[in-house]
Amino acid sequence: MTSPMTSSANRLLFGAAYYDEYTPASAGEDRLERDMKMMVEAGFTTIRIAEFTWGTWNPAPSVFDFTHVDRAIDAAAAHGLDVIIGTPTAAVPTWLAARHPEVMGVNAHGTANKYGPRQNMDITAPAYRYYGEQAIRALVAHTAPRDNVVGFQLDNETKYYDAYNADIQRAFVDWLKERFNGDLDALNAAYGLNYWANRINAWEEFPDLTQTINGSLAAAFDFFRRSLVTDFLLWQRAIVDEYRREDQFVTQTFDYEWRGYSFGIQPAVDHFKAAEAVTLAGVDIYHPTEDQLTGKEIAFGGDINRSLKDGAPYLVLETEAQGQMGWLPYPGQLRLQAYSHLASGAMGVMYWHWGSIHNSFETYWKGLVSQDYSANPTYLEAARFGAEIKEHAASLAGLAKRNKIAVMVSNEAYTALEWFSIDSGFPRQVSGGGANYNDVFRLVYDALFEANLEADIVPADAPAERLARYDVLLAPALYVTPEQTIANLRAFVSGGGHLVTTFRTAVADENVQVFTDRQ
Image (tube, rainbow, N blue to C red; front, side, top):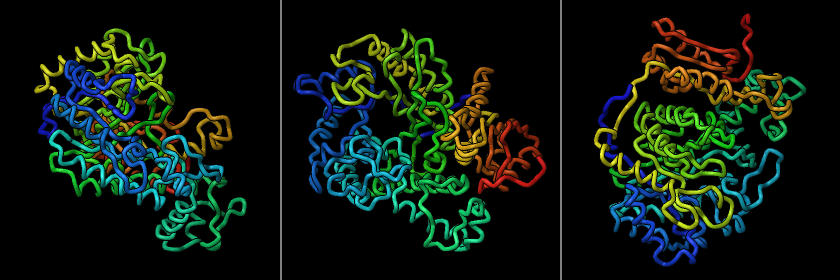
């Protein structure tokens, strides 16, 4: 059920990511002006800029050149368009990697990443944080006073990037010391470290984690690294808050497990905890089109993101227009997809991206317009949608869902089933893969979708009072089930709720130690 609600989102956002920095000189000096005119003609209200451009406007330490940023903001303002500013920290500049190679992440094989790809850094590295803070402060201080800057995006699709750097491992050991009050006997017992002589008898002898065979210890490490993502986003939020106006929102591009498209919960971030860093939940949702368009990815992505802020409207910061090869939508599908986002509770739809880039890695992940910038059928269909929502924006903005069904999800269960896989009981990485947690989650979620039953998504640590709102709660593959979660589920059932579980539920405690209860 959808009903009006009071919200700061008093209008719908429609637009795309825009990169003046990527535009080739051959496109002409007036390309920016022509792009803005086309956006207005398509009913756009907003563009998103600056993320992934750190090396462009900060070409050397303490040197800042906001020419491209200002050009985009000025042009947008001249055409009545709002701007979302993205902090640039998801890809480090060459000078930072060259001067401080320690900012690069160390992978699961113990090898330092090489420069080139985005998101391959250690987000806790002091040099990365130092220069990242300089860049964030300079950018936000420069842009926050602009009237048409309506919000800020923290980083982009942030995760812990599977980093095993020494500083992260040291911080993890400190976290364990606090968690177990310095008691190694308690730690060894909780994680079953007597097995294969893995017992740790002195904190200074704590082993490197890249080769651990202990699923409990590995799960704890992943839990800790997910917390680093939350801390990282809260750190950025605190900086942005020093400069932003009260009417400017803070968001993030939360994304999902990637299987060539958005598939299930993101294992490398606890989105429910990370959402504490934002005032407006944002999301990336990508999916096949043409004959493979099902609507399920749009629905589950929206349901998760809407649930992050307890049902508040969210913003689709990225979704495809033409997309990757094979995703060019059939006539009518682009509008269908956009309306599906709004029906899930989105307060806006923004494409990645406006103009298809002319070289480098994502050349053929096509934007709304292709490399020739012409008004193609995809653009024209987007313009039709823009005109329609402009006419009905007052009745569409600020809607909220009131569902009576919820699906419980768990990052901890996801990690545990990577180590004790559904198919073999051994780690998925060494046993040939097979089904994972998200396969079970999507099996359950998709069954609801096919039955036309809408649902919210709740975390496994949701308090009893939140669960009590629902008539039906589904808990697929909830392998890790702490005592508090068990108590909350019992209270839900005792209060008249209907609980539906699957195999591999209530198998182990929060330390991924299998219960001794009769099974």
